[in-house]
Length: 117
Image: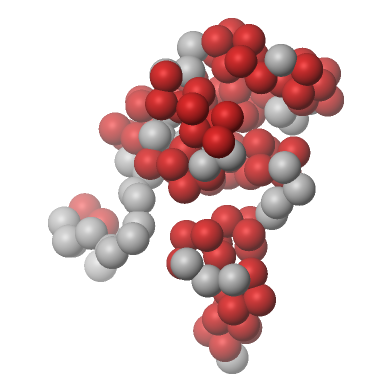
């Protein structure tokens, strides 16, 4: 059953739809820029100015400053673009999955392994 046919949300899940894409456009554009080393260097040298350059909202800038990945998802961040940002923090997708599920990374990995059996 697709999301369109099932309006009942999945608990704890933030859906990335057209509305979220519009809300997070600037944030995602900034995170996409992190594909380039010079962009990562510029961000790390002056995060506030870099966020301003892309027109992030006040809430998005605060979430960036606080490294609030789940907050960034709620503010329209696409997980695939946010992966560029969290990679600079030394985190990976399993770390984000653990955050989203409220588990430790080890518990999250065990859950994935069990689901794959």
